[in-house]
Length: 164
Picture 1 (cartoon, rainbow, N blue to C red):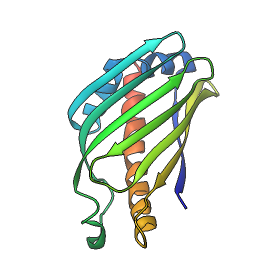
Picture 2 (picture 1 turned 30 degrees about the vertical axis):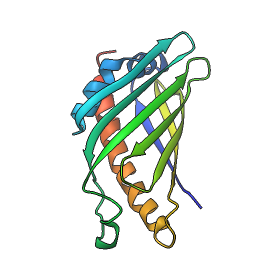
Picture 3 (picture 1 turned 90 degrees about the horizontal axis):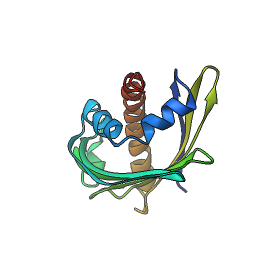
Picture 4 (picture 1 turned 135 degrees about the vertical axis):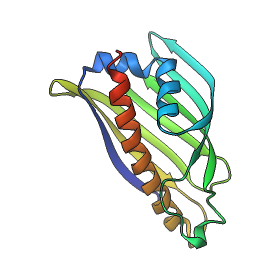
């Protein structure tokens, strides 16, 4: 059974400001650099009245402690290909993440909405591994990594939002 985690990114500016930031290719380039990712490459970026999508590839280190048994499944540094896709009318999105050489699939469903004087991006992450016996433990390790990276992502995004 897949592991699910709920995360939220809170912003001090409106949905319109966050949307402008999220749809900007430069935001992603700056955010990934600020969060320690290296070898960033934007593979595709599309923007229209209906929404936008961006696919990036980068190298990142694991932020969660990896126990010895998991090291044969999870490297200290991984190559990630991630696609963020958003619908303009519903302000809903999806993240699809492929981590080369890691037997855990990660996806997230997102919803950007108003919250007080600002905005919140509500995310439901789904992590799944088909490895018998240890798959659940690998999902748990990956979930801790997602939580740490998500907090760092939120901080970087909040700083970058000042420009929008």
